[in-house]
Amino acid sequence: MDTHQNKVSQDTENLKEIPKWARRYAESRTAPLIIFSMVFIACFGMVSLSVYCFLKGKFILAAIMVVLYVATFIYFLITSDRHETSYFTKTGIPQSQSVQQIRKFLPLPLIACIAVQVILEIRGVFPNHLSVPISALYVCPLLIFANWRWARGSFIGYLWATLYGAWAIAILFKVPILTFSEGGLLKPGDEMYLSAPVTGVMTGLITYIYSRYALKKLKTVAHLQEDTNEQ
Image (cartoon, rainbow, N blue to C red; front, side, top):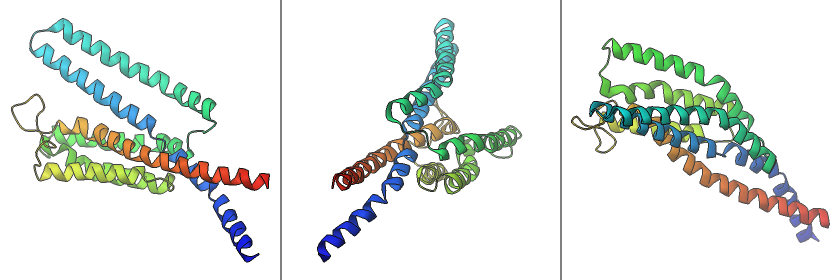
């Protein structure tokens, strides 16, 4: 009898975890983050290639790259909300409120900080190769605050801030590969264009793996609920 009561009590506790795992799965859906970061990298590649072609006198090819960049960017902006709506229709899982809040409140202070950094850089307050370390002074705190304020059931902001901060530190210590050198197509300071999307892809992939784990746990407790209802 006691064994049966213990099992019922344990099952009840497990069923209480359904909202928790459903929330964690919703907040760990990083497909939009991965897609956005990869689109940014692709666009950056197109712009870099177009500049290279222009400098080499291949103006037609450069123009084609620019057109592709603009078309890709516009297409992404137009279809992003439509894909989110399609996902909700297919799965019944809406975009988490935390993502909506972050989209609403984070861009403005981030843009303001970037504008101030660009002005200071143009005025020669700090050298170009310190762009990423300087940006980490506001990017990391903003990501950490956004995660703490709106996404307490997720760790995306903390992980992204950690990876971005690690890249900034690597630049300060001139770690190979992560720090561009003079003489190439990419020069010191150009890390600024890749640091956010590359760390975004890494964050998205890690969090995606966690979302699969959360989904597995959710299915387990949901299956337990079905068995309980049948009994």
